[in-house]
Image (cartoon, rainbow, N blue to C red; front, side):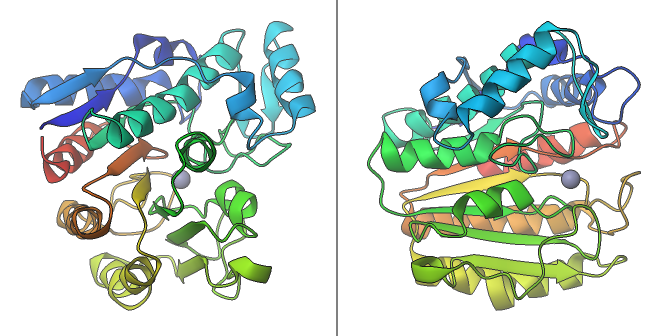
Length: 308
Ligand SMILES: [Zn+2]
């Protein structure tokens, strides 16, 4: 079976103005994917319901995002631009991740890529942060546990920034393993190696902070020494990936040096984990990645690793 492709032109309507997290990112990805002629199975996203979003976010926060967008406010926090359509588009981005997970657990493609925006991994339970409104991957993971009855879900996050929102959602949740490799110290400030989860979930948060200037070798070591062994111990039934491409050697917002080959290698390791433990189920969600000249090629490469 081919690779699922969860996308809607509606994601372009989250108008952030002159901002690095812009519709041009998805336009570049779509153009590159069409040129590459990959064998993708289109899956139509649907908006996440309020109940699905409330597994992760406080109702009052969801209401405040809706109200801010309706009022035409331009920012939710100093970094996070919005427009009138942003609330509906953010619900669609979260729903896209749910659709991909439902397909993988049901009889759809076991591997999918969600070409979505706004991104999600910085969004906290009651706060927008870092270009993110709702935490798409956390909402999808919670759906897999609470609606689909899975017992263990793993999230790997190779976006160059630490996924503070995702970690904080699940650092007390032993049914979810969260593994992040990220530039550190760097935005958002969290993600030290000592942050390992709490209570019964101690050990189910795995942080691999890397100094600026780290490249393929350091990322490979983080995978080999920390992330892959943690996945093998945890034996997830579903693997989710916060696929940011801003650790790339040409990204304008960060200082890491991961090459195209480095991203392919990391993707291959996760496909192998998914095959071994998850019945092949691997859902990849776009997070960051801000060089629109190369982002399309990075994502096309990633889709080929997923099996397209
Ligand atoms: Zn990022």
